[in-house]
Amino acid sequence: MEFSSAEPFKGEGCLSKEKNLYITFVLGGPGSGKGTQCAKIVENFGYTHLSAGELLRQEIASNSEDGVMILDMIKEGKIVPSEVTVKLIQKGMESCDNGKFLIDGFPRNEENRTAFEQIIGAEPNIVLFFDCPEEEMIKRVLNRNEGRVDDNIETIRKRLKVFAASHYPVIDYYSKKGKLCKIDAIGTEDEIFERVRPVFAACEGVQ
Ligand SMILES: Nc1ncnc2c1ncn2[C@@H]1O[C@H](COP(=O)(O)OP(=O)(O)OP(=O)(O)O)[C@@H](O)[C@H]1O
Ligand SMILES: Nc1ccn([C@@H]2O[C@H](COP(=O)(O)O)[C@@H](O)[C@H]2O)c(=O)n1
Ligand SMILES: [Mg+2]
Image (cartoon, rainbow, N blue to C red; front, side):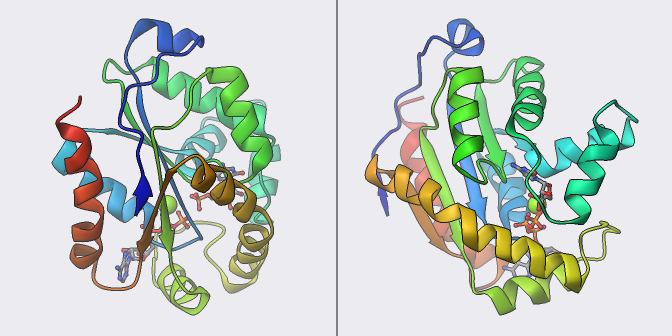
């Protein structure tokens, strides 16, 4: 574990002027268990969970202007232009009184990361990275059964390629800032949560 930053962020962005922000980025490949562990963090530590993928799927469902473009990108496992995703995250953050956010599946690449800094004007306090072998991720996604258009072997392979090609610079960036907390994502859901729990328990005292 190599994180140090439990202080609230007070930056120049519109959100950070209004309230103390405690932001956790939750990273990991498709099926690594990000959403599953976020639900447990919400239950135990009272964070607001914003999944970038879920916000994009809601945008498709709402028949918005960008919906068709987003659907095409998701079917191909590609990363949606950052401005679109960050604006959705911003809306989610603004509609919430609570300043404690889990931002799941974001940033996926360096463009995502810098767009968040520019538009939101804030940085994460902690970056969780669920480290999971590819074969396990494939198995979990194929068993998920939630009717997602991208949960098929062809798209999973594309998502894994995109993940392998783009996540490392983000991880490396936060590692150098002492914000990265790498979690071994093999084990039962409860076993993994016992690895996650101390990260948030350590922050409780300072919030
Ligand atoms: N530790 C685990 N062991 C076995 N199955 C798991 C574990 N954690 C999660 N799962 C299951 O694996 C599937 C994928 O988990 P989850 O949706 O949390 O992953 P994710 O990282 O959010 O994936 P995506 O990036 O595709 O949204 C789900 O069906 C979930 O119930
Ligand atoms: N920052 C992001 C996050 C997601 N996407 C797109 O959504 C798909 C599903 O994401 P999950 O986190 O729910 O797995 C993903 O494959 C991308 O197409 C994105 O563009 N940018
Ligand atoms: Mg998910």
